[in-house]
Image (tube, rainbow, N blue to C red; front, side):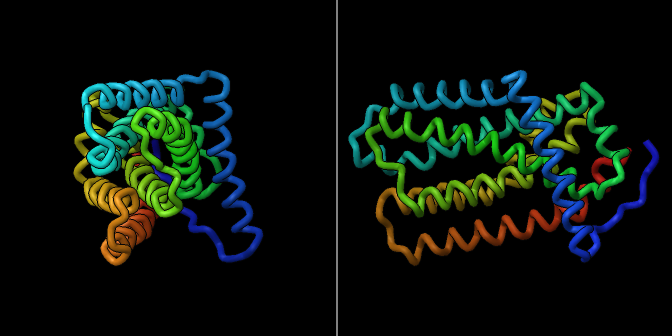
Amino acid sequence: MAARPRTLPASSPSAASSFFRAMLAVAWKDLAAELRSRELFSAMLVFSLLVIVIFNFALELDIRTRQSVTSGVLWVTFAFAGTLGLNRSMAIEKEQSSMDGLLLAPVDRSAIYFGKVASNLVFMLGVEVVVLPIYALLYNVNLFIPGFLLVLLLGSVGYIVVGTLLAAMAVQSRARDMLLPILHFPVAMAVLIASVKASGGYLTGADPASIQTWLNLLIVYDVVFTSIAFMVFDFVVEE
């Protein structure tokens, strides 16, 4: 595919409105396709539920110990389910040649990227909304703590922001199912560690000052990698 000069979003209100309309159109395309097929979300949800049920029977622990391992179990579950969703989301675009059509559209390519981020984030958050009550019931742990939910959101954003960019790279390879986890997990390690530490801190009632350090790391990670992805996505999707 011939490279097309990138058009940066203008600062005028009409240009900004056009940018957001294009972003929402891409996101809605993915959500509407998923509503018809129920393929991607179902796979992520079944995988997540299977993992937490296995952990429930494997970790015969007392309630206090379960609180200490909850953050790790949840983030392992969400990380693998998220990677599964990212891989399949981009694979569908490749198989149906939808990405070629999106790249030919007269919109800024960063709008395509943020649209994909939005739809992937909706899928991941949807899985989390279903998994959390079930996990809380199985493990008898209170997960509905505002700070914990904030960490869940920040961590999910960071994980999806990086994963969407790397999925766009990996989908060009025939070994994309293996390549994406190899690329994604090392880059996302910082956000996963910070999410586990901050989540564990809220669940175990740790010192707020120690939790704030991990929260700051999550915020910085989200901002930095969103900016990097915005700058390089145009080059990633060029062939």
